[in-house]
Length: 194
Image (cartoon, rainbow, N blue to C red; front, side, top):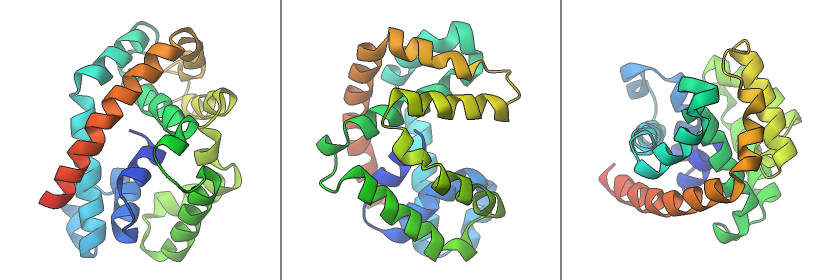
């Protein structure tokens, strides 16, 4: 899952949300240097990624992309699934998406000092271009995929993945909906464990 799903799946706990958001930038056992709720968020993020990567529905989605995008297919599916979460936000949360995202950006500003340097550098771009809200539209996803393609020096052809998104749109959406229902249940159980 990508940024929006990780943030959403954290629930209302600020520390867990921050931890879940920064987790990709915290390697190995370095998570132990953070306060308890942020630690939980980092471990939750890892559990979400592990569950997602091994799930049959997600594999079905990545298979559609594998021919043109190789091992970047999983990254692309994460982004596409965030699109469907944003697009169908009202089914998942009572707060409007734009307000939810504004509150999250404010949370980042409040916790700036604890964020890894890489996140601190990325944050102004994320907020000014409003990445999370842009997930809700196909043109927004196209722009995100273009930016991702530049980051990996064009090796992934991610910038062309919007073609498959449009071609298999209803299939991706159906797969996301079925998978996300199972993921939410998995996360609830994981949070009890942590």
